[in-house]
Image 1 (cartoon, rainbow, N blue to C red):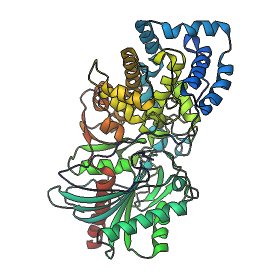
Image 2 (cartoon, rainbow, N blue to C red; image 1 turned 45 degrees about the vertical axis):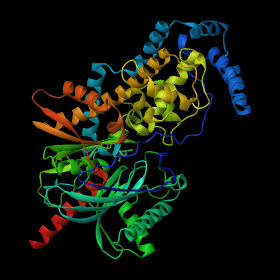
Image 3 (cartoon, rainbow, N blue to C red; image 1 turned 180 degrees about the vertical axis):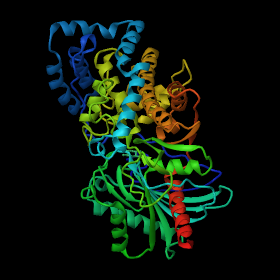
Length: 549
Ligand code: BGC
């Protein structure tokens, strides 16, 4: 849950001219603090005696009983051999140039070579094909779910719609009025989903959603109206139609009991019926990637891919119906259908092991869903800050950063927020203003300019790797579609707020796509909200056409 929003309710009103900024997620992990970690021994960088020394000194410096209690057993276990102690005690005293070299060497494992990225493209394509084909789908990691969305908006969609947006760092209810000339009015309200509901029962979750919806309708004077609703539900959904979807698995820190394998539209309708106070027509359920694609396609008719790089990561794209073997077309002759790849699960079968690091394994083993969402855990905002923190802890305990002096905050899981990565990388070259502000929040008081430069480099390696992984996925989709020009609609806090993510992606995708194809990346204006209204509107448009036949 986004810390800035946790426990708070915010009201946002935007229109087509003014885009309300999404508050930055912090990538806060749900894990328990684990202040002194064992770090695998690896040559000169292994954490052993120096960890012991710094852990003890931390206990003294922090002068808290808790820190001391954690430090002493760690000290005993890390001080394994005299040789290690000798080699590591020298690191804190190494020159700036030597430290920089060590940082760069350790970060080597985070950099993807051109060959590795190319290999990733092959493997992603292979997994996408397995997801699309009937025979291999049950065992595929990248499920490529059929969305049942076959029509992109044509700009003629009009009317008043409700939308629900569940799946990021917060839950929103929206009232959207689509108007002429690609104009729209939108009012929305963010509601917190308390942690106990995120991991409580499905009934509690949907009752909470229905209650927020009812309150929202009352506040916006539409309580007595019967309105169509689009439900953006950003989790893997096995769709059986536009208004029927079974949850495959929870991701991103959610784990509500009794929802997996259930139709979430029905669960929503049941919760609304239990209240009995409002009248809603649920016209469509969709993923946030679908919403993003639709929202961009409303203005840009080349849009064929929707991408999210936020709390989670995923992409959807326009596929030919012949390729989508699981699509039950029921006499429908339209040539295309949107596919929700759910690429976050790529690598769950080991396909990413050749590029995964000890830090990725650590993230996974401490997550709420070990062994799942491997690709997502290397990319998205829920994990990026934590990845950086793990590298920092390792280097600090080895004496390479901060003269070996760590802090309680640095040692606590989830407290190096993903927004810090963007902030640190936003400093002008040679200046470390944001970086030092971040260090202050982390309680790191001993940093030299050399430390700042090294920390920035670590952030750059982690975020660049994420951008290159996403680029491999997008280039694979662009090459598969094989259209002369493709616009990719993009949303999500990492893409939106990281200062270099966009450029890193443009550069990498350009190198990976077939000669002759061109592309552009378009920031989506609230795909989860406006996109939901558009999917609902397109569905209504179809209903009207069909009823006239
Ligand atoms: C979910 C996807 C979603 C993505 C971005 C992932 O964890 O499985 O359905 O599109 O996050 O929000």
